[in-house]
Length: 115
View 1 (spheres, rainbow, N blue to C red):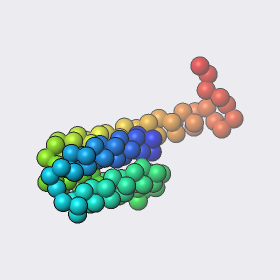
View 2: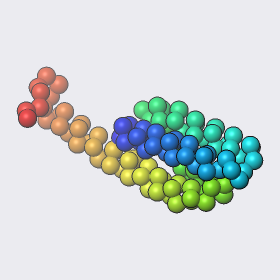
View 3: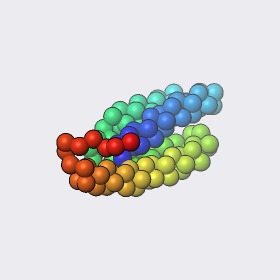
């Protein structure tokens, strides 16, 4: 779950950087600064997905990323796409963690999985 969530957030940060390049021509410094701060916060949150607070912050950043569509209209679509990926990362990650826990219970702590 952690790896999937961190991957989604890291890619979001990169997309946000490209959105800043699009915003540079038409928008004020305040809007660009807001976008840069958002990109940095998303990147920092990628390292926090080990904790529940990282997932909560990541969910908040999804909403902010969609809202940045007011500055760069393409971000409405990209934000919605990444929000969907964020939800998928959460649920698929939970499923993977359950499968891993079940495998560890079956194998025990001293046995290696056979290939």
